[in-house]
Structure formats: structure tokens, C-alpha cells
Image (cartoon, rainbow, N blue to C red; front, side, top):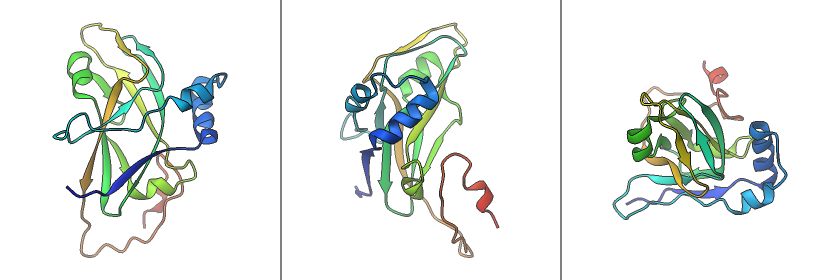
Length: 171
């Protein structure tokens, strides 16, 4: 196995900013921040790194929530982190990532938001099931994938932002 990446926490200031953007409440932000766990694989055969919920959540059918994970990821160039719902949550409840697959590029680490990985999830159940995820439970998994580029690729633009920031960089 190639070792090509490292998970880290974003700064407390960045986490508090993104938390307030979602929840409008930072009263116990240091406790939440201090309880954040870095993603890990559950077994030596696991491809995915589990991301953990930073708070208790309850999602009724068709409800959506944005989760600031407090996590950023350094990875070598030529790799991408692809994020998916944890398999069991998708199977049992149809928990969905709103962008279907989260794509974390290697240069996202250097963005103005410190490369803060956030997930917007929806309870897309057809069976009217409520989803409860406790603080510290895995809810999303990230898998590192190597990728290639075309022979005639001449892109030299650099990222400085999060969602949608690379759209304006196209030639």
C-alpha cells in the first residue's frame, strides 16, 4: 500500500466559522472541536476511512443537514479523496450525500478555508425511516484514488476556494 495522505483538524477558528454558518451557535464550540476524531479505517482490509459525526443528529425523511467535519486532508498530487455515505446508512436508510460523491482534490488542502471537508447529507428514505447518528459514529467514508491526466493537459491554474471555486478556472 502506498502512503500518500494525512488527515488533520482544521484550526479552531475555521471550524467555529463553518459551524456558525450552519448552526448559528458556537456556545460549546471548543468542546465539539476537542471531541473531533480523525478518520480511520475500521479494519486492515477496509478501503474507506470513516468520518465521524461531531454531534448527535436526527434526520427525518427528506431532511438535509450540512456537517462541518473539522477535518482537512493533505495528499500527494495525482490522488483524490472520494467521499461516500457509510454503506450501512445508505443501505438501511438511503442516507445520501447531496453531491452524490464528494471529490476532495489534493490542492483543496491549500484553500482559504484550510481545506475543511464538509458534507451535506439527506435522509432520502422511501420507507419513512428516521436516521439517528450519535456523536462519534461514522457517517461517511473516504477512499483515496489515483488518477491520470491527458497527454495534452496544460492546466496551470491554482485553487483558492471551496465548492465551485475551480469552475471559473477553465480556459
